[in-house]
Each structure stands twice: as structure tokens, then as C-alpha cells.
Length: 215
Image (cartoon, rainbow, N blue to C red; front, top):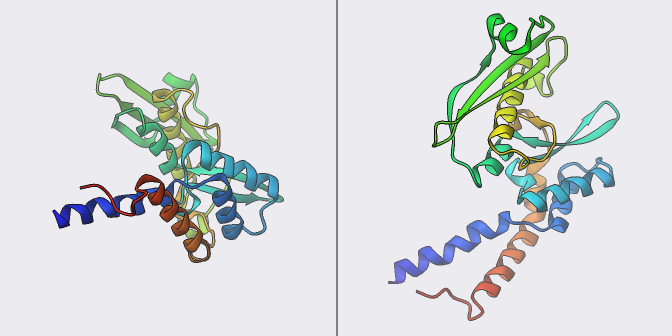
């Protein structure tokens, strides 16, 4: 019985800190990207609250393109949102489309773009094909760290397929590969640890006012 209580008591501490408030999301976003403008931080924080996302879990990013900052979701965040209400598997891709497929689907071959395809399938065997491209002459964010235009095309095609699987459920935000996006996550983790733990302890007390879970 003691062992069962121990297992139960650890669950909230592992789950609740990821369910951050808008204020906590703003705090983390400011710490990770201190140069980002306030309006973009607020926008990203609202997104975190609405879709239960966490910057520390590499789901939401603020990226500077030239002089402008934009909010970007990781492909893993898109998968998480879609998986909340849908089950699916990958039938094909992500992969580069052949010229024959381009002609069949697009009506022509666009030699200046890398076109990719991803096909998902739900438990009822319904297929959801997704298409996405990235310009061949445009650098991908994080290309110096191993990212590539082809990978960006793959991600966009998967996002397009997920959007067909879960229409209207995914936010209309640019998607990226979280493996290549920079940010001072360690600093945010260290400075935000106390606040997140305090919130978790407060939530645990709300769930179990007497200080311990029921057996």
C-alpha cells in the first residue's frame, strides 16, 4: 500500500508543471528570448495557454527573421494537438514528391521548389495526404546546425496532413523543426524552476487539501 501511495503522489508533480498559466508562459518566453518584443511575447503566451503548450518543452518559439520576430510552433506541438482527439499512423513519407506526382497533384513541375508529401491514416482507413514545399534558393532556419530546405518541406507536408486530419484544431502558425531552434532554455529552466514548482505545489494542495493523496 505504501508503494502505491508513492506512485500516486509523484504523478501531479510530473504533470501539473507543464500546464502553465499565461503569466508563467510570458515569464519563460521573456527569459528564453529577452530581445523579443512584448506584443509577440503576449501572442505566444496566449497560444501556450489556449493549447496547453510549454516553451520549456520546445513546443513554442520566438524567432527573428530579419528585423521581425514571429511565433513558431514545433512540429511536435502540432502532433500533440492533433493526437488529443485523433489516432493516426504514417502510410507514406514525409518524402520528396516525384515529378510524376507533381504533375498529377499540382498540374505542373515546379523546379524552383522542393515539394514533399506525407500521407496519414486514421483507424477507419481514411487517408489524409499532405503537401508542402520550400523554395530551393531559400535558406532554412538553423541550416548551419544541420537543418535543410528538404527537411522544411517535409515538416510543412506533415503539418498539411495533420490539418486535414484535425481540421480547424491546429493554430495557423508557421511550423519548424525544434532540433534547430536556439534559445536560452537552461536559463529559463533555472530561473523558472522555483515559480513552476511553487505553482505545482499549490495545485497539489488544491487537489489534496490534507496534504496527501487518497490510497
